[in-house]
Image 1 (spheres, rainbow, N blue to C red):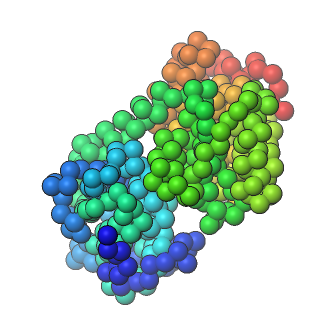
Image 2 (image 1 turned 180 degrees about the vertical axis):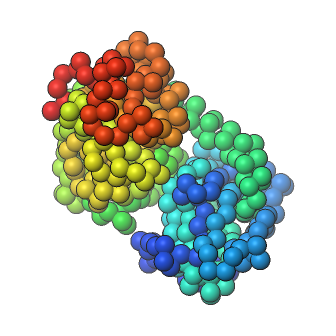
Length: 424
Ligand code: SF4
Ligand code: ZN
């Protein structure tokens, strides 16, 4: 019999009641990630002998370090390394535990967590700091919740928090990146056609009650943190949990990606709010978006294509809206034809709005996002159309943002979208 860790060593409350809490600039004491500093999080499994249960270490300055100027927001690089061990632990479970970091940190009164992997973004309030909250408490909360929620597989858990730039960079390259890459490579070998079932994900219903993600091998959850393999592993870990299989059966429409089984699952799990979704179209019954999508895709009619913007990009886009403005009309669990939240990974998928022509429709995206996805996107486009280096044809903010200038660039490059069927 395992002992439940109910007492958490933390000076502020930790409860799902604080999940939706935002930390705004004026109440913020410290910030990590969010484009200002590098920040990543990793859950990795190790041998039982290699870690010490409940060992929490902060390597580098804490948020009360004397180096910070009084009254100014504390900003630090951050690496959160959660090592777990257990005789029933499997490498496939790591991502499931890792995604829960998002929820566990949001349970902390005075903390906000957005993103995942190396796009993690954390804010802490002045009030939490005043009550004595320090970085080791992040470790305490993660420790307690990992032991509590995953007691079936986690026998030992150790958390190390790094805040020195050199450690954060080095360990990213040595430990985090190789693990993220390995997971992506495994996932890349699977296709929607090659599996018998998709999975629902209902984790975000606490924020968006009618939202249901349908996770397939070629279309991960829009938060970017739940792949088909993750959903499958969650089902194993937590049989009655948020990820349930949807046995595909025969498609009603292969092009749009409509399955009766998927519609039934969405209708039931959204309590009837959404009755029909397509998996491969953004115009006809697109999947709903909750609030934690990594990117938003929206139609730019005059370019006969779509623009993509990632959460980190604060500036406006050629459709005249910023990420935040687009998010307010796309999120909340409603269907907004022409606009859709999605994960970064989808930008390397042959199923990305394939009903409307696929990746070739992308006419603009922020440079940082383009650089991040170029290799996979180029490969997919090459395999589908023969076009080499497609990313070079996609406009970005360093080239143009204003509609006419974007169009001029697309013409100059001979962008394929200009010659495709009208998008709407
Ligand atoms: Fe699950 Fe979708 Fe929320 Fe990701 S965005 S946690 S896949 S419901
Ligand atoms: Zn969400």
